[in-house]
Amino acid sequence: MQVINREQAREFMQQGDAVFIETLPEEYFKKEHLPRAMNIPPDEFAEQIEQRVPDKSQKVVLYCADEECPASTKSAKTMDELGYENVYDYEAGKKDWKEAGLPLHEAGEPEPSQDEVASALQSS
Image (cartoon, rainbow, N blue to C red; front, side, top):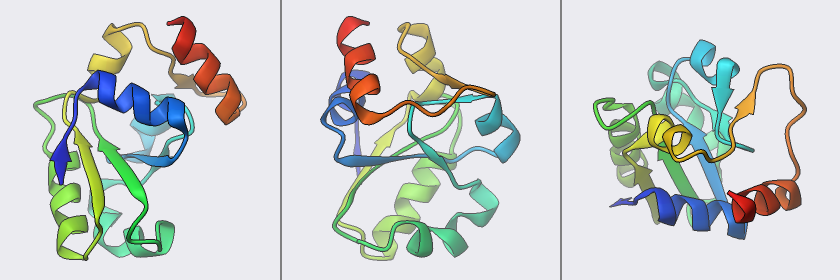
């Protein structure tokens, strides 16, 4: 597991080859989340991760609310223990992303395409 910063997370998202996973309870994910992210709540993470991301060589970026939130780090350690090879922990999380003015997907909006996300990140 490697800790990454906002710029690294942004690059991974622009490239489109990483799976982003929010490790907060579902109600927080439904309100807003990073574009194209999936949600695996912390109390379900160990049971769901191998089913949701079966390729252990897949690049995965985990995040939660902010640096005070331990869920993404705990989930990253779980992935390491399960043999995942490319696990990244964006510790500053959703708060840091939002404060930088980067796009978030909000409830009720259609999920953007990868091209739409890359374009929005270039203009942010």
